[in-house]
Amino acid sequence: MTICHVQLATGQKLHQHQRKPRIINERMQKERQNEMGGTKINIYIYFNLFQMIKLNYSIILVNMCLSALWGSILGGEVRWSFEEMGLHSRKVANILTDQCGLRKGDRILVILSRIPEWWLMITACIRTGIVAIPATSQLTAQDIEYRLQASGAKCLITTEALGSAVDSVAPRCTSLKTKLLVSSEGKREGWLNFDELLREAPANHTCAKTKMNDPMLVYFTSGTTGAPKMIEHTQGSLGFRTLISQSTADTSWVVAALGSFFDPWVLGTCVFIHNIPMLEKTTILRTLSQFPITAFLSPPTFFRMFLKEDFTSYKFKSLQYCISGGESISLEVIEEWKNKTGLDIYEIYGQTETGSICSVSKEMKIKPGTMGKALFPYDVQVDQEANILPPGKEGEIAIKIKPERPLGFFTRYIDTPEKTAATIHGDFFLTGDRGVMDEDGYFRFIGRTDDIINSSGYRIGPYEVENVLLTHPAVAEVAAISSPDPIRGEVVKAFVVLSSDYATHNKEKLIMELQEHVKKMTAPYKYPRKVEFVQKLPKSQTGKLQRKELRDQEWGRV
Image (spheres, one colour):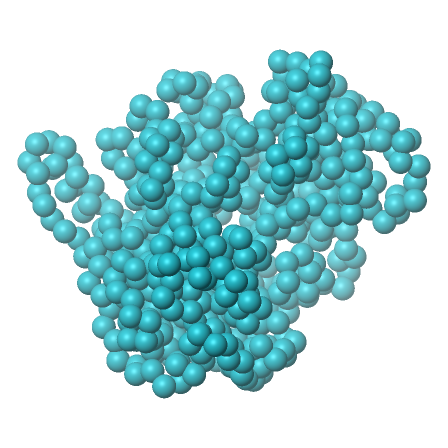
């Protein structure tokens, strides 16, 4: 297992650096206003995100449980100054251009977990203008083939664990020219050994002269409503996204690797990364106790798991801010976490297309059950068929993108202009999420439009059903989805993972007990008419529930 802790050098200040995004944003806005006024000014703003991030950090790599794959690279505890990381990234940049033949605008599929090579590869791509396509190491051969063919990636980097999967599909991916293998010992025919190349690569490299609107990253969507789509972000957009109000005094641990890279560094925040298998709650709790982490962001799944543990042996001496994102978190979890740790949970909301849209900053009042207010530079509203709804009314969460498209926003869905067009109604981008805004501008998340269950004319969000069920001691985990019904069209079905104390209980009686529990806690029409007990629920690498898998299975779309 690998831990990566990015720490600011003692006494260094980044106040001037932290102001840069606002200055550049104001400049761009003025230029755009001139264009809108009829005086078109063709000013090309050159910007490279790597140059923006100052060399004011050090990286500590701690090998908690030495394994063969990383051992010869880390060899225990290794410290990199950010200057040393810059040195390594320059060498990787030369590997990409000289050994792999990649040029600005070419794409590379990066299938790596939270290891140092991931950091080096992304920073090297930024330096060179090569477009990185980050991907989870849990991809199957079919997933890899689809991404290679759809993206036209010329290069791929991964570890030995996925080498065979890549080789099985590579002959059908005609754009793929080079394969890089991260392995200190192993070699594969037809692959370049990344570790060997890194040792020999020259260290002199000049950042490419990239423009603000040059593509920098491509993300694949999760494929909720069909085949995964490609989302494009530019050099400029990710340089101005803000995760939450943090400072140079914070050390931030974001479970998702991408989130831990851009937002905290732009804010001058220390970054902490731990390459642990997902959902190892004991290891996560021990890490939060052992290291000086001040801010921790994860899906609600982790907080729910933590609360089932005995906290007496864990002391979070440095932890100050707990942030939940990815899906709704129940009031009961927030209150119990507060009682056991003394810490509030701040909710945050965002999308791959936009980054963070709403959050609760340190200075704001926390309203449990809400995800905070709209973040700069977004104008967020609740929309119904291109009409802004008043406070208290449920609708689709929308972001104003006209006449000024906000910084931090994605540019397009690549190769699917119809998808891009379908998300724009009037002056707004529709997120596909349902929500409500109150009188104070705080937003409450209802659910994905695709997740909403339509039963006998009632619209039921899965989160409320799940959160109520989680208050019952028998329920360890739960996912609520729609299930076909000949009378009501759809009904609520709950997939329940039982807590160990209830594993041997009579299942029929337990189903009735859970149904009555929901009827008492919320509107009776929301209770799950179907309940199925399962051993585990499908989750993403970051622990987020994958309801689509269950829904496809339930509706026979597998």
